[in-house]
Image (cartoon, rainbow, N blue to C red; front, top):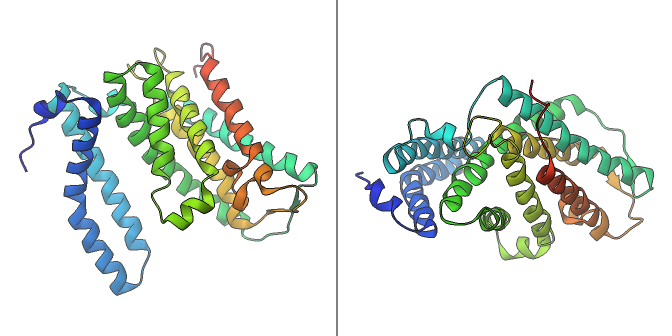
Length: 285
C-alpha cells in the first residue's frame, strides 16, 4: 500500500490523526477478523491478547514510517519519547512507586476509617506478579499512543494547554468505547480518567530538557500509569480489601474502582498538581 505521508503531514491535526488511525485499522482489520474467527473456533481468550499485541507492533512500525517519511525524523520512536537507558529505568521506577504508593495510601485510609475491611486471601504473590506484567504492558502501550504519538500531533498545531486538555479528553473518552449499559454504569470514572490523563502529560513534560528528548521521556508517565494499574489490580483481583458499606460508593469508588470515587479523584488531583510543579533537578541517577 503506497502512502503519501508528506500529503498527510500537511493536513490539520484532526485530519492527520484520523487518517493515521484509518490506515492503522485498514492494516490491522483483516488480522482482527481472522483472530476473532480463531477465538470462536478454539474458545480461547488468549487469541485476543495476541491480536492486541499485533496491533501494538503494527502501530509501532507505522509510527516509525510516519516519523521518517512525514517529518524526516531519524529516530522517530525516540522523538515521541520511547527510549531505554539507565535514566529511563530510573524515571520509570520512581513514578511507578509514586502511583503504587498513592493507591496504597488510599486503601490504607479507607481501612483505617472503617470504610473498608481486610480479608484473608491466598495466591497474593501470583496475583502481584500477573498484575505487574499486565501493568507494565498497559502502561507502555497506552503511553506511546496517547502521550507519545497523539500528544505529539496535537502539540504541532495547538498550544501546550490545548494539547494537554485535548489529549486527556480523548484518553478518557477512549475508555468508554463500550455498550451503552456499561457506559451508564461506569460514567463517574470519566472525571478520574480526565485528571489521570492530565497527570500523565505533566509527568512526561516534567522530563523535558532533562532527557535530551524534545518532548520529554515516556518512562515517567508509563511508570506512573503502571504503578496505579498494578496496585489496583492486586487489590481488585485478590479481593484483599472490600468495602464495608459504611459510606456511599461515590466516596470510595463505584463498583470498587477508586477512579470512580471522591477519594480517588482527590488522589489523582494531588498527583497531577505535583507533577505539574515538580522539578527533576538533583534527582538524576
